[in-house]
Image (cartoon, rainbow over all chains, first blue to last red; front, side, top):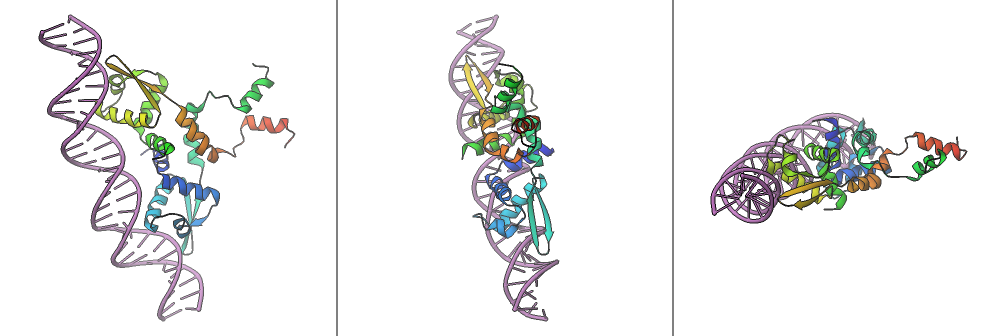
Amino acid sequence: MADDDRVFKALADPTRRFLLDLLFARDGRTLTELESELAMSRFGVMKHLRVLEEAGLVVARRSGREKLHFLNPVPIRLIHDRWIDKYTEGRTSALVDLKNELEGKP
Amino acid sequence: MADDDRVFKALADPTRRFLLDLLFARDGRTLTELESELAMSRFGVMKHLRVLEEAGLVVARRSGREKLHFLNPVPIRLIHDRWIDKYTEGRTSALVDLKNELEGKP
DNA sequence: TTGACATGTGACCAAATGGTCACATAAATT
DNA sequence: AATTTATGTGACCATTTGGTCACATGTCAA
């Protein structure tokens, strides 16, 4: 499976996106801590985290008997740049407006 | 299922992303035309197009015996703005640099 | 060192997904 | 009118997915 496909598939599940949101709010959480935020058994969360790890969206480090999970936004940036950007171009943003104004364009 | 979840799930399949790419390159194609670009039966393509339609990524219009398919990038923009943007911020772009410079920030 | 705690593995299961086919209908062509 | 062309529906099937559980291992604390 291609890298970006793994990322898209990892993002396709709402539980996994919620896990990313949790890690975005605060990094370095343990499995049990993440489990406590979800209405799901520890094993379900483990599987989801594994999918996220294989997509490179989460990086984990073992510390004693705990496993600490960290968010890695790089894959999201990659699919953004290589794929999504193409479909979201063409909108004038405030910044682009500013730039055009400075350059004397209408 | 929530709207953005439908979009993420629709984007999770490489065949469907390829269909979007085809429609991005040229709009208004018929089912048979799209089928001819894929190593898959017409029925498989129909199912994928249906998923894309239900996510709002493709809009179709019947014309005689043909069905014309059009790309609608709005849902991609929405998940971009509401979700992906959050993870892709923090990169200094040329435009942000310019804005900061104008405002006298370092 | 004994027990509690944190994580891991493999079996297992139901439901969703991705795909095919037989058949059907509607529209254009000849 | 007869035929071809374009699309639609429902049954069907294999595989993947999302989830549980029993059990096992490693690590910290009393």
